Amino acid sequence: MIKVARGCLKDEELAEVRDAFEYGYFGLAAKVDEFERALEAFLGSPHVIAVNTGTSALHLALDALGIGHEDEVLVPSLTFVASYQAITMTGATPVSCEVSPDTLLLDLEDMERRLTERTRAVMPVHYAGNPCDMDRILSWAEKNSLRVVEDAAHAFGSFYKGKRIGGFGDIACFSFDSIKNITCGEGGAIAFRDDSLVDLLKKKRLLGIHRPRHSSTSWKERPWRYDVSVPGFRYHMSNINAAIGLAQLKKVEQFLERRRAVCARYQKGLSSLSGLTLLDIPYDSIAPHIFVVRVPGGRRDRLMQFLRDRDIETGISYIPNHMHSFYHQEGLSLPVTERVFQEILTLPLHFELSDEEVDKVIGSIGEFFSKEARPSP
Image (tube, rainbow, N blue to C red; front, side, top):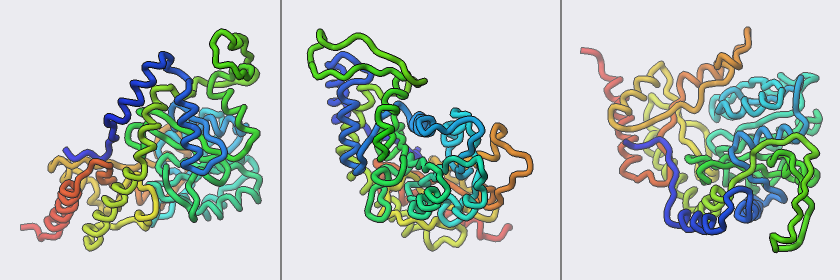
């Protein structure tokens, strides 16, 4: 089976985890702090807070900004349900927006039309690792006194106009689950610039707990008292997960180089197929997380089954959230999003995918369209 996605853990990760084991405490400890400092250096961000999942990162960011009951957050419907659930957990309402058919990124004109007096934030999703038009989003948000929480789960390592996602803007949230550009096994992070959020986010990720600062390295002199001054969550990253992330971060450029090479091979091999539409994404200059094509004409599901029969796994990224029963709104229609959902197909993309496997995917897709083009006997 050619897998659609997979992580890559080797001896370097085992060595870091062994070191974490020997430390003897596996919760919020030294490697988490080390991972956060390494992320700040990589992203060019003044502050990074590591958490246990990307969903927690989104929820914690929104909560720390005071987003809550009766508030609205603008978000594209075509995103993983984690984006919506994070908004819902604050008590706010996700407002579904259209995407642009050529990129599957947030349609900014549709976003602007959905602004109301209850709108408090916008959540652009950097789909496939391709950054949204952040200049326009940040300018519009500032004009309307909105906060911008970027769902950058796909975009770790991507650049926007020479700056890494997470190194500018308001708040960017990353995921480090098992199939992301780097993995911690499970994990996430919040990158932000607002100094006033540092202590609040640190408290909220660990049940609102605040301990007095101390300089001693001796456990005998550490204070045992702590205070709880804000509501919080059990969202901190573990020392073991941070250890995996530290090893992965050292290999991130190698991972991204291979992902770009796979995307380039797909583009070259698939661009001439008339039954397929490629997205308008500059794969050579971003950190690609998924490779999605559009299959018009009602043939997507048949192609998916055709590839499955040849031991090629594919996926659908994603079911639009306004089509889920929990987020369904009577009378809401997003025709562009609904149309592209019927066409999108996610092809295999990961670091360990060989050229031979990529060529098998390309060849199998070509075979499918050749058979589709033949007249019935």
